[in-house]
Image 1: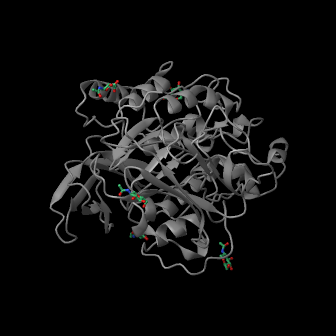
Image 2: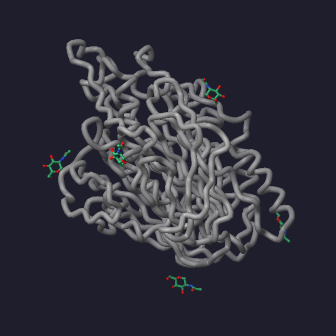
Image 3: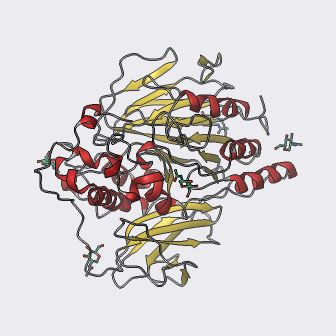
Length: 497
Ligand SMILES: *[C@@H]1O[C@H](CO)[C@@H](O)[C@H](O)[C@H]1NC(C)=O
Ligand SMILES: *[C@@H]1O[C@H](CO)[C@@H](O)[C@H](O)[C@H]1NC(C)=O
Ligand SMILES: *[C@@H]1O[C@H](CO)[C@@H](O)[C@H](O)[C@H]1NC(C)=O
Ligand SMILES: *[C@@H]1O[C@H](CO)[C@@H](O)[C@H](O)[C@H]1NC(C)=O
Ligand SMILES: *[C@@H]1O[C@H](CO)[C@@H](O)[C@H](O)[C@H]1NC(C)=O
């Protein structure tokens, strides 16, 4: 979401301001792991990514099923990497052969690290109920970002959330850490490209940009180092979003999704082999895996869910952040012509609802919103979502919370929430960032819930094969602001409509 247009005409006004980027302190031991991030990498596999202020010769993790017996050790096959303007190095290891749904303890190998833990993924087809959170448009907290008053009653089971930062959404994710199994975050992470909104940063954009990234991913690490945190891109990962007239000021590392690609490129999965007994489903799932381009577009399975992360920024006709796109960010492309849509088609066609009854597609820019709809996104994606019977579309970009009835071509499904053919859609963009909430002036006909007053995120509860509960949570209070249940019969094994 873009705001603050007034700033664009006068970014150089503060020539007398002393440049000062608010970098976090570099730990004395530069092998100290920071910015930890887990992801579901395969049905029995978890990726662990982290950054260090020194380039490591070897990036390794020790792990096991008991905290005092980390009897396995895995090292990355490639050395840690970085990009110009970054102070840190990215490290990744992939843990495979994990027993499903089991607590593992892990220690990133360093002369200064501690043991943390995660729960390994549920096997596709496991019908145990579980919850996930959808968090979008989050942003850094503190001096270069967003802070709010309130919520002084943190009882973090995760130790390192700094209460002085008054995190709302991150604090709530920490307080409720036992209530959800992973997080999906389709776009707009740190808001590092909003560095120029702090006058102190104007003469030092390059450092300010990197400083915000370092601070944000440090703040997120207590969550993303404990729970798989599934990422796809938003416009704030793209480029010099807010500085179209002063691109000379744009730090190199800020162009063309550079940080996003480095950070998540090796940690997100491509797709899962199908466990369907249907051979053509297996072939299609393999095709989808080939066509996937993580971290931009990919899919994964977890228990009753098949989840597809899409890229609403580049790589389709008139994509807003693509070459010549409406946002003038000239990003990508990240695949060959039509690769993303070919991926989505093969992927959705491969889903065997006997294995994973629920299909969710998550992306950044919405086409159903009371704000600005992404029409090229609707043009590119909506028919595929409908044809293959996607159950729920999760989007953000507008900084608020909205829920819509199942809808196709802007017409609400006659069945409503009772076994519709069309997907249900939500916007869960109210997590809170420096740009603030987007007000809702008029609602769409098929809007069922709208909130522009609270910082929010969504909890999606997979109750069983036929019932999916979608809640909106107020980040400050934890109150459930809206709750709805979608009923789907799911009696067609390969949906095509
Ligand atoms: C060790 O790690 C902790 C936590 O990340 C950090 O606060 C501390 O500064 C580090 N110590 C050294 C000597 O680098
Ligand atoms: C956090 O909240 C407290 C009390 O509401 C306030 O005094 C403090 O300034 C806030 N901190 C920041 C960094 O905004
Ligand atoms: C096998 O899967 C394909 C595509 O995924 C589907 O079109 C076909 O109907 C399935 N066959 C059976 C017997 O379910
Ligand atoms: C952006 O990066 C991708 C992947 O490295 C590359 O294919 C593409 O050409 C780049 N686009 C621009 C405008 O530099
Ligand atoms: C699925 O969950 C819903 C809501 O909790 C419940 O009403 C329904 O009976 C459940 N269905 C089955 C088959 O357990």
